[in-house]
Length: 94
Picture 1 (cartoon, one colour):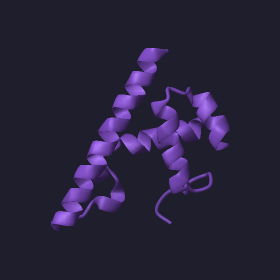
Picture 2 (cartoon, rainbow, N blue to C red):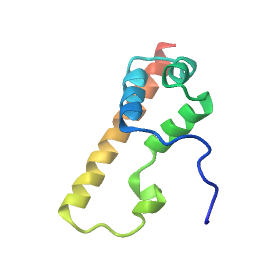
Picture 3 (cartoon, helix red, strand yellow):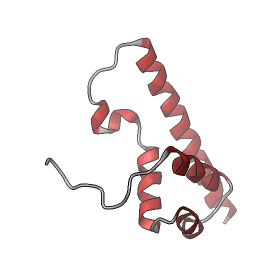
Picture 4 (spheres, one colour):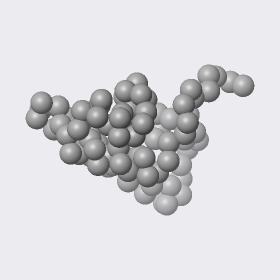
């Protein structure tokens, strides 16, 4: 084993989608945690992970050369920048 294992259960795509919706609606972390039945720390951790560029993640350390891979990276970057904007807007509303 090369590092610590995640403490909680894995995130499903549906949970990640719901997380995006709740962030966009301006919900606070405590409410999001209750709705998703996760700890506030898990919510902060997942938001932090979603903000990272795919190149920051260890599984995408190899160089990408196929057009489809570059397109996937561009799409992920767009989605994470959009998420950051939503989080910042939600903080401004408070």
